[in-house]
Amino acid sequence: MTVARSNPNSASSKTRTGALLLKSDLERADAWLSAFETLMPELEVRVWPDLGIPTEVEFALLWDPPDALFEPLSELKILFSIGAGLDHLLQCSSLPRDVPLIRMVEDALTEGMTEYVVFNVLRFHRGMHIYDLQQRRRQWLEHTQIRPGSRTVGIMGLGELGAASATALRRLGFNVAGWSRSRKSIDGVTSYAGAAEFDAFLSQSEILVCLLPLTSQTEGILNAQTFSKLPSGAFLINAGRGGHLIERDLVAALESRRLSGAALDVFATEPLSPNDRLWRTDFVYITPHVASMTAPETAAKHVVSNIKRFKSGQPLTHVVDLDNGY
Ligand code: NDP
Ligand code: OXD
Image 1 (cartoon, rainbow, N blue to C red):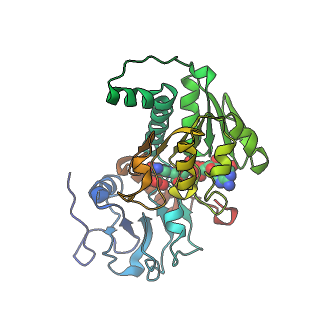
Image 2 (cartoon, rainbow, N blue to C red):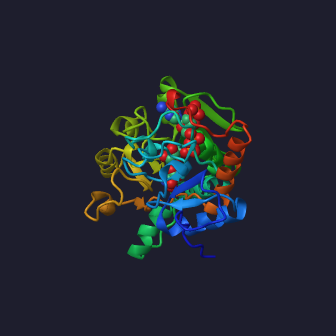
Image 3 (cartoon, helix red, strand yellow):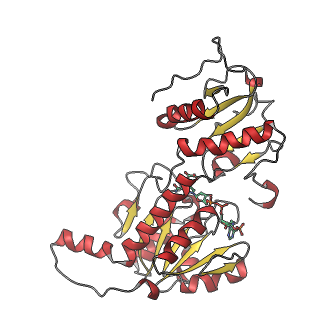
């Protein structure tokens, strides 16, 4: 269904206060409008850059806001991130620090990431990168099949997405280790916590998956030193953020065969330049930041439920603790 963009200057049955400002990618704006129309028809949704009267905006649902966006939004009550990651918001200089910031947690996002991780773990585990090369060379050559119980996948970040991926991989029979700030208890998953346990975690991670948020502590964490602590010939899957990876260190590790392959969904500069060396590096599998996408149909429920909680004076859910490094 196509829904016309709301026009705050036209007469409308929707309330003029408590409007929600939406800044999503253009392709999904109509799907968001449609979902809000179904779930909360009384909510006026304004699609950026059309702010209308800025002081009427009480809620904002954003991806990658421009630097000055928040300056006129003096009545903002709740700020929702469209993505699970918050780096796109935290780098915005006018971001108000006194407005609750809510991260995106929703089923479709979690399912999509689980699929991406499982798909790429299986790609490397089953040697599909080798068979792919052999097909291009028209080579018929069998390789030994390794059972998942003989393979350890290490997941950096055991939050919403990391925990779901870990559970799915366990179900497939892999040994799964996870690394996070605090210790976790996930059935069958060995939990490592904090800097002191990082090396022990790395030493067994034959397939390393990065699902960390990008923070000052995690920036550049996928570097030569990290790679040198992995079992020889390990694989890397990065769906966290491009800022986690030192690309030249990855290329060197692949060229020296320290690492055997990498699946990369996120890059320091997106879109990745057509001239980037990664495109030409063997056994690198590139996707354009699509590992997982917030689905308006399901995600709008999370937004609406928090707006309803706010209006009825109940505590909000998934509020980010910015003072605690989030
Ligand atoms: P969560 O906040 O739920 O989980 C983050 C995890 O990382 C937590 O387990 C946390 O540990 C851990 N962590 C954070 N900082 C550190 C640190 N310094 N050292 C060790 N562990 C740390 O986030 P999500 O799982 O929802 O999302 C993770 C990231 O995935 C997002 O921030 C985003 O960058 C990326 N993403 C990418 C997408 C894509 O399409 N490529 C789509 C969606 C998300 P603890 O629990 O102990 O605090
Ligand atoms: C996210 C993303 O953070 O899409 O949700 O990367």
